[in-house]
Image (cartoon, rainbow, N blue to C red):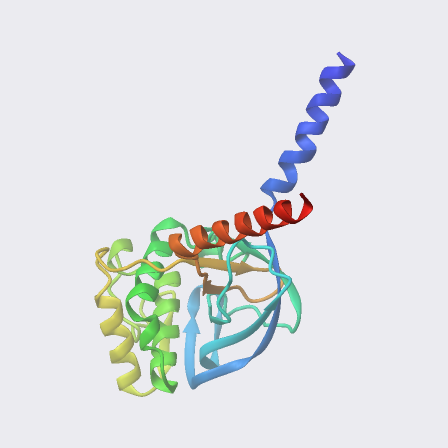
Length: 234
């Protein structure tokens, strides 16, 4: 009996760390490119003029399996940012937390909408207007969800929406709306994760998976080094 308990304890010690979310140290260095836009999130009573655009992050001590992108977008505007904090790297559907829509994370459906938005339009973010339009589209997905959730893509509707824009150039709103209207499930899907912290603002960012050829070449290189070392030891 004692041996069985010891074996269970040893297995648990191996499994529990594997279930823990990887972490990364996040240093927020500013929002650029950007526009200053007045926005509102009625559900949580948050409104005001904020910097809307690309959140630039310096990421260190990355415990995730793949390189993470330093260009991120906000998915929890009710929380503030803080310099050099350890964040959990989570499945995007489990973010934002704790201040997501309705007090819940966005879920799988909205996560897929964001994956398509990034897949279609992330490369279009090149200046202040496109950066702001992209961030507005991200907020609209996370907090209103669009037609898949019974809501029109309407960034200026203050009647019943969980997110809307109070004031900005009409061209920025039009651009964001056009990008949202492209989301039909047929576009390319980007690799995304959530950077989540219980006390600070959550982000969404991309990660890079090495091409199969690069992985194969890396494996061949490692094998060759091992072979050479064995030859030298003979």
